Amino acid sequence: MFIVVGMECLLTATFVQTVCVMGQKPAALIVADRAGHAFVRVPHRHLIAVRDERVDETAFQYNIPLYRVHDWATVPDQFLMQFDTIVVVCYPTLLPAQRFTLHGIRALNVHPAPLPALRGPDPLFYTARGDVPATITIHQLDATYDTGDVLAAAGVHVPPGCDELQLIRIHAMQAAQLYIDVVSSARVAVPQQAEAPVGWAAFPFAEAYTLDPEWPMERTQRFVAMTDARKHPYWVPGVRQWVHALDPEGAVQVHCADGVLRARA
Image 1: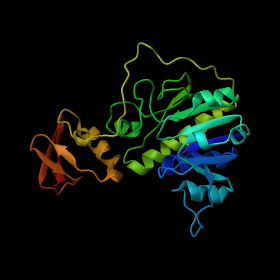
Image 2: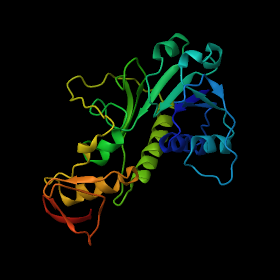
Image 3: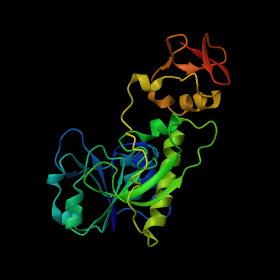
Image 4: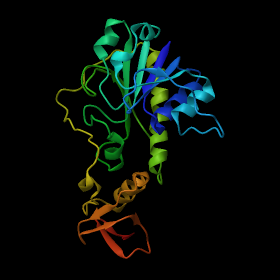
């Protein structure tokens, strides 16, 4: 049996829904509780309309026990020892990897970026910005962030015109398929490439939203489209002004390497 550990977010919810559709329903779900509560099973949201936007609604739809936890020291050993595999999908803090190993539990992490090129909590932002190719990596969980041996990695096709929510769903569905491939085959984990450059995918500060004039128009357009749900303005260096959206009728010129776009202030 396997358990999914994640957050109340679209990436976790879509991953869970996809593995369920593919016939691999988790035995339980655990989501992070930022309120500081101890480990507890929680009732599902009363379902009015089925949506794949929330973990609790997905759990209700597929009849999966749902738990929340802040401090993993409050999770009983007897509970953990029910499972042979833990799959982490978008969890905000380090998990007790050594404890899982002690109990003979295989612990895997789903990371939506190539490793070690982009470790950290918000890799999809930098994928949207064009810093790395869209990728899903599944690696063994260890005691630090995104450093474990890699079991599999696969490129993700991101179609033109994709917005941020679509970007998340596409990565989550690809992650579910790759996870099923990993557990259904004898994959050998390999260390991350020691000679490869290592980047950190921090939650972006304001300067990360700069529209670089050396980018081609296509990269600028994709970056804005695939970060739209964040509702953060973009900095245009040439005119030293913040803009909120690209718009052919906009008053602000956005210079790119191969032409000029327009945006609304």
